[in-house]
Image (tube, rainbow, N blue to C red):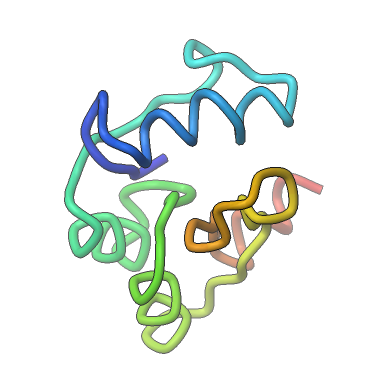
Length: 95
């Protein structure tokens, strides 16, 4: 999972809200701390299965690759700018 560096706002939200909602812990996922642009490139290049992004990077990824938003932080916490996206291929394999 590509996200931002440990200790960043994205990291805190990912570990404190998103993973907890999915009954996951930090040890259940391999988080790669990178810039949002590198997260998009990593997802498009299939170096990661998913990316935790905020606007406009999630929309950029959706414009350049067949990825789908699977989670929006705003559903659980009033912070609507961060979403999790993944490729259709990865999503199909996980069903």
